[in-house]
Length: 309
Length: 124
Image (cartoon, rainbow over all chains, first blue to last red):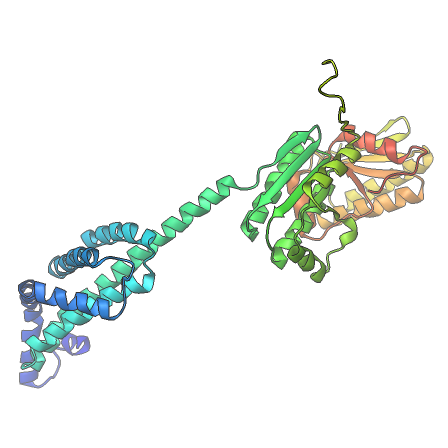
């Protein structure tokens, strides 16, 4: 259609050109007409839409009342965008909506699905209304489709944005919790790792460990991996590099609590295990570190009866 | 003065004060190995704390320096490697396997003391 319109002044046949001119000027009047139509049949169309949502098994985690109130708001917002052409209010609403429904486990495909369903329901009602006049229907769709697409786009983007915001927030939280470097004795650090190690976290861990070696003037570091279920090859390699880098800074590393899976990964990628000092559990690791540093822990057998001092 | 080599008892202390290019690095290596034999040293400490970067040639030279020093009867300890240099070296595969390392001069002297004592040295 667009191309015809642009060449409207060209050598087109008279009647056709006339019709196009009419269509062009009508587009602006068509939209209010369309909006009026959608307002008039609001309850009926909304009911149909809700029916289609249930049929398609979307939003199963929400109650019918919730679906009703949300669909009412979405419908009104939808019509408003058609009327004003501004998606600002809709974007705001979509963000609020996403904030409400993401914790309920509503998926992206559901949100996109319901918007596309509404688009479909409204388009069908337009087909019915203008079924007699195909040219007019064509113009109506010209006005309707871009706006509808833009709405679907806005809602989907808002939803995904909100999701990503939540994910980013969680990542930040994890990063703050992760990898403390603790001094347990003079010149002895422990680094307990808990949870999945990805490349980013491994990099951060190395940074903190090397900085910790310097500030605490450590000679021995015990890295405890009891809380790590599995690592991939690049992270395993990174661990080995961390051990090497610590050695360059004059600290020896003892690794404890390697799970059988990590052990298999290390052997499979062919790490030189000769330079890795590994000990079964954290207790054994600390004991070995104390031995290397010359500490000796002696238990006082008669602790209760002995005089203090 | 890019490098100063001082004698301290049985040991030589070499501090690299600025980044060395390849030929300077080689001259440093020659001078140091020469002095080890001349002065009958038993240990060498190389302090790289002033460096921000250590290129692959310099790392390789440190490695061969340690090997040569061992052939002339001295153990080598590199001290003052910064976290950044340590990790860059490892990532680029510039390992210096036969070189002992320590955090700073003080601990380097301790390591040398252990290495050059009559008792068998502990593993690196």
